[in-house]
Length: 342
Image (cartoon, rainbow, N blue to C red; front, side):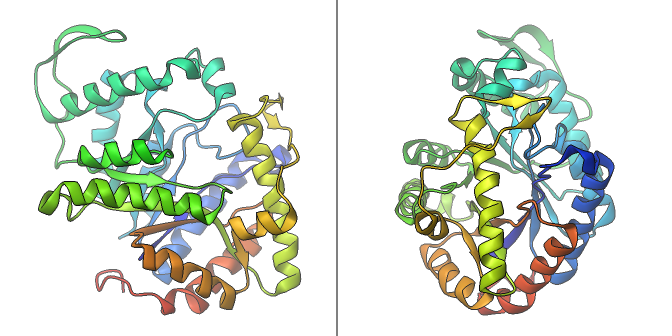
């Protein structure tokens, strides 16, 4: 199991400043490369103060410029928000500028608030995503692409420049049926149980494994990346404090994911969670190093290829950097990892 750091750009207090926010993300990227993580992931969201990266490809290029070996993964580029004729060229350019370290994670979008205000209602997002993905694959793989669909209709075009290599694509999916179907199509998968139970995670992982097994040898190299809120605390008191911050994070997340979308001047109102303190604690990974090792062994045993950890819960940058160092020194040595990363 490899480890990946989520550059989640959480922004609970806008007075902090966007310049400081992105400087923090770059400092974290440099550190995780130094201590031996395999990669970083970069979200795409607009108009809200959570996961705030309006242009993940732009940040990917910047991260690649200040690192030398990290994989840089979008998590995820929201296809319904983009014109594929423009986006395909941007992907090719970003991959070239990342010197072949880009993995393109794509998805349909999760926040109804965001999609509605961008003129792409969530009710259409599945249909828009399916057509956009099919078109993107064509534009990246063929010249003189002509298209006549519901959302695109155009005469033959060729995206320039042409890709320097086949660009790896990961699909984001939460529902087990969607995970299995996407894996059967030959895609790498990104998923997360969010703050749901371990049983939910088992269902997601099993769906990927069924899809990969159905492909036989052709599915051997497909990867499953699974993300969780994850932060190694100094001690039990620090863990309790960070768990409260994590509740605030998920209170904002679920407001725009499944809730009413209460947003004021870009700031999401944190809503109370319908989970007890113990239920919430068991569904996120915010604990001391010794407990973290024990709990992550389950993830390794399940066969997860890339564990994406989000440790940015609203605490200071100094605390985030300390948690990264603590994870690298006290947790990572307990897990089998590839020789290339080691």
